[in-house]
Image (cartoon, rainbow, N blue to C red):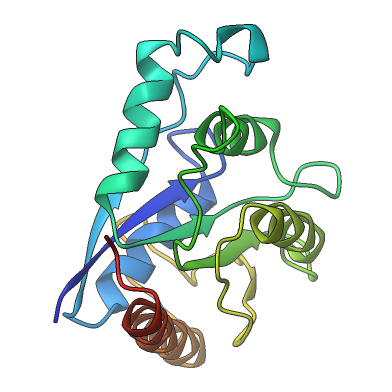
Length: 188
C-alpha cells in the first residue's frame, strides 16, 4: 500500500541545506511513500483573533495536512530551537481548538546542521510540541545530520556511502512506522 507523506522544511531559504536533505530523503525512500511538500512561507503570524475566520493560507495548510497520511519534519536549528516559521505553521495547523490537523497523524523529525550535534535541540523541542498535538512519532532511529561539504549534492545525491545507508534505513523505518500506525489508527 502506498502512503502520501507531507513534508515540512523548517527553513524558509530556497538554498537551505535542509531542502537539500529533503531531496536526498525522497530519493532514498521506499516506493511505498509518495511525497508532497507542505509550504509554510506565506503564513501570517498566528493570531487567535483569526480563529473564527482563518486566512486562506492557513486553511490551505490545514487542508494539505489533512490530505496526507503522515508528516515528515526536516528542520534546521536556530538558537537551540526550531525555527519560528515552523512553530508558527504548527500553531496554525493545530488551531482552532478541537480542529488539530496533527491529531493521530504519524510523524518523524530529522534535520541537518553544519554543527556536530546536528539539530538535536530543535528536534527535542519539536517532538514536545508534536506530543502535545497527539501526533504519533517515530522515536528511533534518531537522525541528527552534520551537513559537511561534499556529502550532498544540490539535487539530493549523497556522496558518502555510510550517510546514504543511514538515510535509506531511516526512510525504510519511517515507511514501516507509518504503516504500523495507520493499521492501528486508520484514517477516517
